[in-house]
Amino acid sequence: MKSFFGILAFLAVIAVTAQTNTLPSVDLKKPDGSVISTDSISNPGKPIIISFWATWCKPCVKELTTFAEVYEEWQEETGVKLYAISIDDSRTFPNVASFVNGRDWPFEVLCDPNADFKRAMNVNLVPHTFIIDADKNIVWQHTSFTEGGELELIELIRKLNRGEKISE
Image: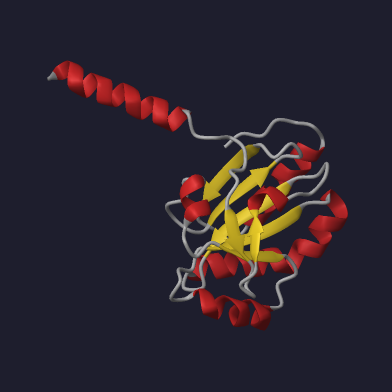
């Protein structure tokens, strides 16, 4: 029996370490309902921020509103591109477009109503933010949002642009 649990523990470790460090290929929807593949998420030679959120998640909305306030400066300074991925399910997905339009967020919003991208990226809580390097490698991730968190995020982007390694 001990060996059975030992094998299970070994397999669990392998499953965790076998998770991809690059963006998985998954179909998402734009708020207008058109389909887009994560393969088209790009920012040639520059980093990407991917932020998972939901309309019902107050910390998520606060985080994205904070990002929206500084996004233009971030883009001018670092060239970073942000994709906000809504995890609203099929019941609340139709509300995403009006929710986003009301806030005039300057970054691209995509939707994952079937949770395929969420599962592939192992997102369990929102907000969940990832930094993707120029080669589409996931180099950092973080859950939750606190005031001032955007300062840490942009500093990590600056380090990445300077060619420095960043860690979680």
